[in-house]
Amino acid sequence: MWVALSLAGQGNGLGTLTTSEGAGRGEMVSTEELNTSESDAKPGPLHHWRAHREKVAKNPALDMTYRIVIGVVGFVVLVVGIICIPFVGPGWLIVFAGLGILASEFEFAHRLLHWVKKQYDRVMEWFLAQNWLIRGIAAVLTFVVTVAALWLLGSFSLVGGWFGLDWPWLERPFFK
Image: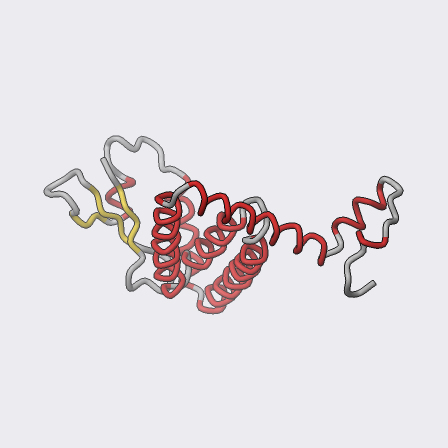
């Protein structure tokens, strides 16, 4: 059985589920119907989260506070992810996590998440279709950008200081 969460038209992050089982493929099923099926002997974490979210949504002040907190946390995670993109590591994963946090409450972020994922997949498909020379050049450029960013942030002088290496070229050029 496939299950998909749809947040379209929902400002509070409470969507509807579609399922492949039942009267027809893609039949709309409420979360209550899905969670009370015979195969679900005990409700899972998604059910508990939705029930909690529904309680929060009933109180306008608490709902606004919750949405603001989700917005701030999602925005901070998104910015950290964007900063991490040029570094070797999980930059894009953090970007998608930040957008996912925002998408849990905001429709614009839900649409943006799907658009960014589609563009990322398209670029990666193009990149993997290139020959070894283009991929090698991209790897070297990524390495150069990463080293330059680490140097500008002062990472080399920090690590060099741990080993007693006080070489002037390890120092970042700004904010000495």
